[in-house]
Amino acid sequence: VKDLDFDHGTIIVREGKGSKDRALMLPESLAPSLREQLSRARAWWLKDQAEGRSGVALPDALERKYPRAGHSWPWFWVFAQHTHSTDPRSGVVRRHHMYDQTFQRAFKRAVEQAGITKPATPHTLRHSFATALLRSGYDIRTVQ
Image (cartoon, rainbow, N blue to C red; front, side):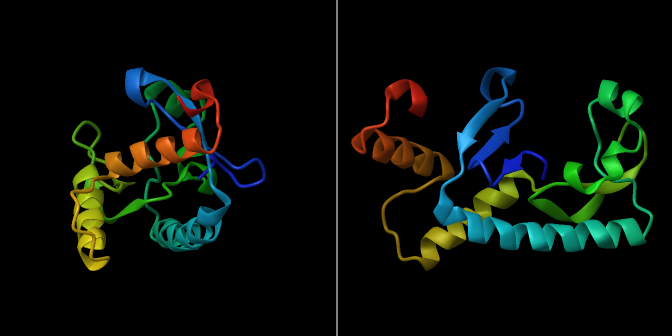
């Protein structure tokens, strides 16, 4: 949640390709839908808090330095898994982020429901967006 910045129109993607953090554009057209998703995510977070769940797993160093941070709303997932899972190392039961496969299945259903006949994947959207930015005059370095 803390990596969304509606005021500046950016999303921070942590540990992406090459284990790098990246700041991406947050199109204004997505803001209303993303705010709705945050509302749903907050409901999951409140439910987990009420049930005494352990919150989000943080990287080891952060977990040691800020042991309560994983319980706070800013650290919660924007797209949380609907079910809880058990951490195999610690045995702690908590909610994880949406799994890639879950998202890919939902994306495939959305493509079918929209009547799109061309092959489409989330990666296809990334390339389409980059192409649209370049055609609109954005600098290649900005797009990269």
